[in-house]
Length: 256
Ligand SMILES: Cc1cc2nc3c(=O)[nH]c(=O)nc-3n(C[C@H](O)[C@H](O)[C@H](O)COP(=O)(O)OP(=O)(O)OC[C@H]3O[C@@H](n4cnc5c(N)ncnc54)[C@H](O)[C@@H]3O)c2cc1C
Ligand code: FES
Image (tube, rainbow, N blue to C red; front, top):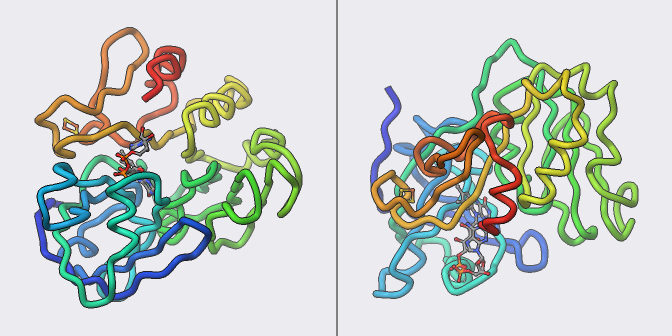
């Protein structure tokens, strides 16, 4: 039975992989031995008083003695995390949440937009994949994913083909997949959902994001609007949900 814990983890490496995007590797056999693809950790950016809450980041991949995170610097918390140095001791809680519903017999198509592809390596390393589609605004925002077949599309055409991820979604790719993983900004995920024909939608799982407080179900701060009314907690009932669970219209309007 998989359990989460709160650990003090040693930073093994920290480097900038793309402008403003950092890779930090932690030593933590406790977390990596029980983590599943799509789960996240809550990182304490600083042992000081601010920021008060931890920052949720998806486990991008497992390493020999722990795991790697890939994150974009967007505010105070991630600025502090970008300053982590090898040897630093950092409080990390995890693994948290419900990740991808992984079935070893299934073949996966992965579709990621921007930082949404951070976390895909763990899934690629755990399942059989027929292809990974990665979309970004430009070459300097393409998240690295090692897989047999990677299709890259950028809005400015600086790497791969020019356009949006939706342009690469074909009946052939959808038909070859038993499961489809989607992660990225809400508008991108909604566009992908709308592009996928009804016949393939039951295969779709989406990894959601929301502002989080606790990360483990007690603060009610991470609601995702679901079909038929109501909300689900991103941190414990997600972050991964079947695509048809999401009320796309309400989620987009909420601007979470
Ligand atoms: C389950 C989960 C997994 C995540 N995995 C990753 C990951 O692998 N890599 C990564 O780069 N980021 C990931 N994020 C987003 C990351 O947690 C936020 O970018 C981070 O918490 C921002 O902290 P900050 O203090 O730097 O920014 P803040 O000062 O808190 O905010 C700066 C700006 O970022 C926006 N922002 C903050 N948090 C979020 C959020 N959760 N969703 C959308 N916008 C937000 C704010 O509205 C504001 O405009 C994940 C979020 C969740 C919920
Ligand atoms: S973040 Fe507190 S309930 Fe989800």
